[in-house]
Length: 134
Image 1 (cartoon, rainbow, N blue to C red):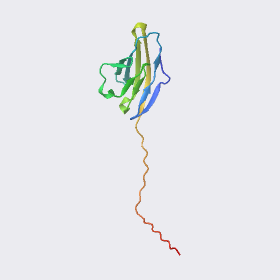
Image 2 (image 1 turned 135 degrees about the horizontal axis):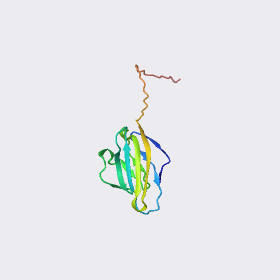
Image 3 (image 1 turned 45 degrees about the vertical axis):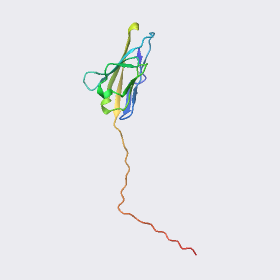
Image 4 (image 1 turned 90 degrees about the vertical axis):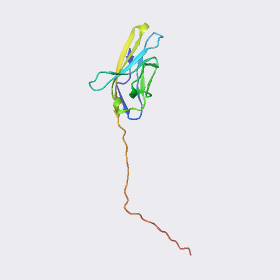
């Protein structure tokens, strides 16, 4: 059984997001972990496949050097992009345990908000101070 404490993760462009899951199994074998993302009505795209934390196969260019898979199946996405937004599905399987589980987490990504405070001054004033000592 794959579980998670959250169904929605909210991230910000340039930061990181943890899609946290966990599973239980009596097997000592490393799990095969597969993360996919579905955006809009397009068919799911594989983000990463791993055996335990060891990534197998080639990553899509948009995910290279930006992802990390943990032993418990969780996925850490670095340097979030607006294009990372979508419904993520993790599938975890262990062959000798005939264990297969899956879970969905929705990732939303907000753009960077910047606050700008400015002022305009049209004249420059020079202050002179004189003091007489007696």
